[in-house]
Image (cartoon, rainbow, N blue to C red; front, side, top):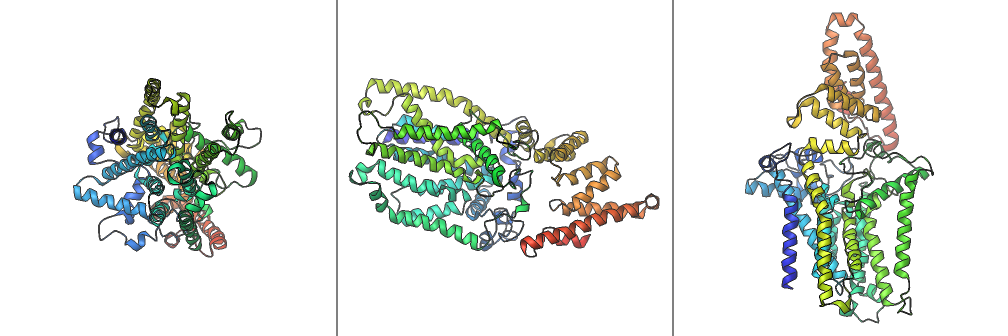
Length: 615
């Protein structure tokens, strides 16, 4: 017992150290002291921490507690048309609490928030080890328990969740879900903790089957301690029926209330090709393309960072993954191969061993139940299966929960290879040698994972390095090209201004996805700086009728035409005619948008009415 506590403590310290190093270490872009005293928010951290009143601690600007439970993750009312329906009040409150803590210890708020994420992840590592012991108590040793924790700790897909505080919801949701797995907890307390996971992130909804089957697996695999061996599966279910009923009721109550309040479905036109190019697909096209998307996530989870079909990027948008257009596409062999592997494994599990006469033996039932439990954890990838419409396309954070199963699976495979866990070998010299060989193999295999984790975590510490890495993995990402253009035009983060590079990336974004209207404002700013006024007029008009850039575009549009129409020489060159032509385009776009949104949202207007009045 003391040895287990000692090794668990060492793993906890290692889990903390492996992530604290890259968020405090100097790199090519920023010094270590700046990362602690004045870190730069990356991507969604900007919107979450600087523009969301729900997480602020200033009494004059912060939202009320009631508003926190009425708003989405980004501080917009859940019933607002522009809301993406991400309901995560517990995560929001945890971030607000983090800022209170930072204020008390007088440290930078963003740095403290990142440290909190690292601590939550270190706790999750311990929980995975505890889950492993619960499932394989009679076969587990300290060595393979440490290995399962190490595999989970070093999984590269966790980086996005751990070092970026905007993804804390996935960590909290998984943490509360895993706490609820403890059968020693009172059923009511377990259900309440699981409900906290539900309102931390939507991830917990898709872990409902995993929770139920994990409870059952723990009960069945330890039946010698908790029940009579003669009890069948139905007996175990009956024994835990109150626990199952509470968690089922919590899940369905959560979904029912969100449905009744209209807090589930994202308005279809809020998700664009630049974010999810397959979102609008239907029928057979949707099934084929999402089978590939799901396979990519499964491989990310099971590949442990050694195998990754698309590389690491914070953004996988339009054209990053080419659409499957026919059944002849060779990439369809990937989901087919995964399906074949599942059936093969199920056959191997169900195959009757030579020393057992009855296929329905307890041994066989245990293995099948563990197999189904593993599948339930992998089913946390359901959001990217295409059966429901979500804004996420491909993302490492979606994989987080499924890596619990991946770490356990690979640990059991290694134990089988090294023939550990056999009763007749316990305490023998042979077992000691095999444990040493297994430990050495794990250390050698974990080295490249550690290197990858350090490198990728450091990239997340600076927006420019993150964008550069994303464009390396996905050069045809319209959003990443646009963000890089903004960096070069403004000289953000100490990057030298370069109009040519800014124009190159902006034009690349436009050519990749002509419907990505955000790029028009960027092109307008570049054209007016270079004195290309006719080109400016064309793109700024497109920027005005784009709901995502309308506010800034209207201001620039008004300033430009106010100056041009006062200039007599410009008027003589047809400025009035051009202005009227552009205003006609804007008015027609507003009219069409009103007609479209009135049909789909009973009168809600997608384009901001204030911007219309200004025009």
